[in-house]
Amino acid sequence: ITAVLRNGDGPTVLMRADFDGLPVAEHTDVDYASKNSQLNASGERVPTMHACGHDQHITSLLGAMRILDDVRDKWSGTFIALFQPAEEASIGAHRMVSDGLANVIPRPDVCLAQHVIAGPAGQVYSAPGPVMTSSTTIEITLFGRGAHASMPDRSIDPVVLAASVIMKLQTIVSREVPPNKFAVITVASVEAGKANNVIPDSAKIALSCRFYDEALRKKCVDSIKRVVRAEAMAAGAARDPQFKFVGMLGATDNSSEVYDVVRPAFDEAFGEDSLRMEPWTASEDFSVIPKSFGCPYLLWTVGITPRKQWKRAEAANRLNEDIPTNHNPSFLPDLTSLPVSTRAAAVG
Image: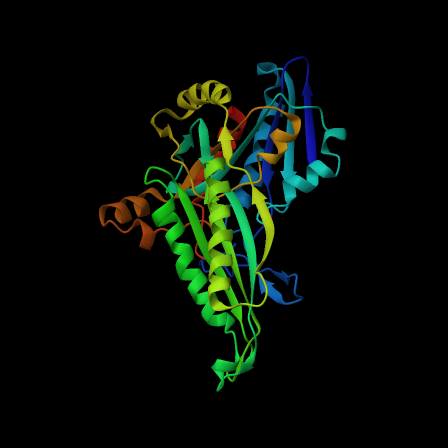
């Protein structure tokens, strides 16, 4: 869904807002808490909510369009509002581009986006360079030989193999990545067996990997393959492991030139609440859009946690325990942050 505001000669600026939710049951007590549910890919009905603040992204961009339309005498050029589906599945931006986005909107000179995060409500964070990680998702199938659970000697147990692989993968970051570099290799899913008296013939694990540096990403992916293949060989597996890459996103690498224009405007608009953005280890598909047009981009964040709650948790050194982060069932943006994210969208 796109909308174009034309207002005479000048640059063309695109701003993106994502609008999908997550299969999470909301645990908040507000009267507008989500009661929605829908069928997932397996046909199961699951509860859903906006556990990542995309509803605020949408509202802020709609509000920015209203502001810009009301003050056309103060700017000139073209503003494109782009509402993107399927960010959480890491496919929405790619699908918009491949579906002919360039044929339905003017070519932007710059692209912008914002994201709400856990942080003092109303603070606006921006920075140049890598601010969000790349994401590589790998599904790995390990092949063994099935047998009766009472006869493990007749098997090549893929459960034991999976356990060995999982433990050995932990050494890649701790022993192969320099201490001054960032890398995450998380085994997020393990599947093996259906019965308590059957040793299965295969096991599956899924990895979520995050990096800021592309060369380091390639090195770690090679290490993952090496470790998995070596463990399979050590276990006597008759077949090589199978690797399936189901998702790959590049790092969000903000343009210094765009930052140098936008940050002073944020400083003027928000004063001491305009702050330096710390790199965030989550991943985004937003950059797919500006990269498809060959233009620079900037993504910033806005804090949504009630300030009293944040101060109490910070004073007690309990930020991790007491502050719900994105994707948490209790994630709940403070509504005082909504005018700020709306204004940030218009100011940017």
